Image 1 (cartoon, one colour):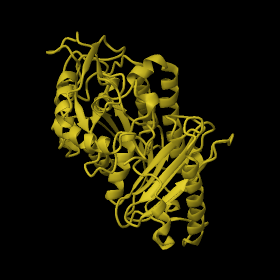
Image 2 (cartoon, one colour):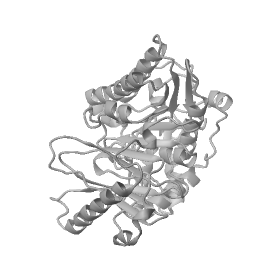
Image 3 (cartoon, rainbow, N blue to C red):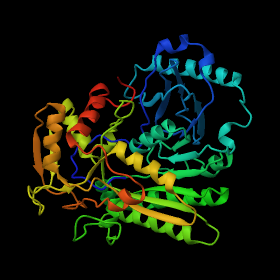
Image 4 (cartoon, one colour):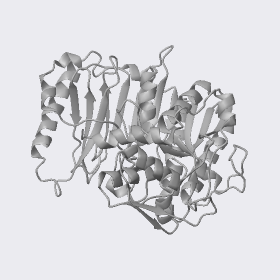
Length: 462
């Protein structure tokens, strides 16, 4: 959901990884009494091809609970898993298993089955099991937020922040970057009493969108339609929509304000503008009474300062993803060097200029937007630092953050990229009292680098 960065061929971002964790044989030694109902549900989808182990970890009590959806199932099912969030914020994660490539994971699969059985037993002993949970009813003073795409890079950080601020959170993610039938949205709305929706779920790679335009148009617009239809059917009135500066295209004048005309030039930006238009039209319809906030944000970097979450690599996405992931891959030796695409742009050093916003600042903007949302009103805000940095500046900062002299290979431009994009954050500063706090590029990259070093293969490794 970020504005397109000057891509490197091997970036590391995730549209589906949620948090941190891996099976721990010591977990079964802890008392089942430590597992309890609380403020978070995660709804994930089963898939026909990949075996998925989604690990939910409570660091405080030592519990790790695994759910192993059947890889052979021809139907896609949803799972709702309550976690204990009272004591502190736990860390959770997932790991993919392919029997053809990883024949030695039998022990982990058996451990997952054992833990799953234990989990079911414990849940059956929990108060309220099989009856109405706190998630199915509205409570005074408690805001229940549905986070779509909540297992992704930005969505997971937003979920963590919401939990910290004592919101009730339900995460929905199909873990495959968009399958209309994977998660039964209406069923989820019917079984939960949501007060608001933060809608992150979407495919989000500019380069990929130029190769698969129909997929992008379908995924981004259909996801939004599904959510709006469910909100209308179940009386949920507040929507915080994750949009992008890619909807502006390449304006003649910088910086970009909210009044800058929107002329997107790639399928990703065009599809996100379509989704915005759908939301705006619906909000104006009779009886909608919607409270809508649309956040158009710029290039997202960084990770949780406490090291609980990060930007997790998925091999099939590296070709299209963020430049920060590619820098870290090069620093780790996963790839031989960094490929910078485009050196002939009309900028000072010939490389693209972007506005890099730290993910911690970004989720802060979402929470402030949620707090300021008002019925029958629409707020549209740019979320950026207001300062543009070139790709060469970014690479220099990454070298300093990692301490590695990363090899650079300069290539021709990537289709759909813009020369210069940065924001004017005046409106969000004034109306939401939001200002970017993490503006030191090297520091944001240093925080992200610490997570990358301790999780070289993404979630499930430490």
